[in-house]
Image (tube, rainbow, N blue to C red):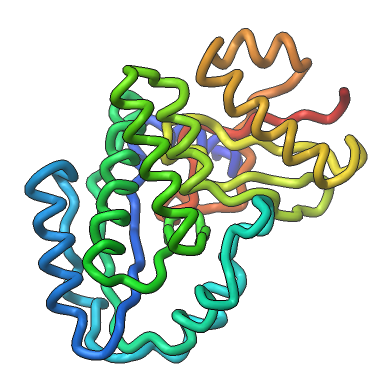
Length: 256
């Protein structure tokens, strides 16, 4: 019988990550947000779809709590009091589903997701979060990520594009029993990064996570593992049918 890690590794060949986007708006605004999302899908977010099962033209009383645990607490001013108030006072909820992604097309799909968020914000969305990793930013930061991604595309800088999408849609750091963890690197085709709590301060660990994310994109997995004396494993707490499940595994760093 396969152990959990072996089952996860076996699932890696079949599981394909997907984006789930949540966007909030005002009273009577759901049709406008749906129209904006649909136009974005037609123009540059191929394969995405507006979810009609859970989208609703009324407030969801769980949103303040949900956004509360999802706000990005790494970047300074990642959200404001006005962003929190917009969540508390929302009157409509739009969900958009992304297509299953492979490692080869994940970055471009995530760029499409980012540009879709930007388009719906321009149409009047008052808050947004990525459900697949549980991360939320304020409107200003979402728009800034979209601008970074657009500039990277313009200059044909795939590394910068992956970085913008990774920082937009991945959550870090999450506290595990012995390590601080990322979730969401699979949305740009990369393994997660887990760093031992004993490595250093939380700020140092986050800086390392971001460095490793860049190094994975620039030099590849094998070179990064050798440089960092790190290991790749598939021992994850997420089931393969969980949106947070990373089929590319987990890079674990236990020492400097």
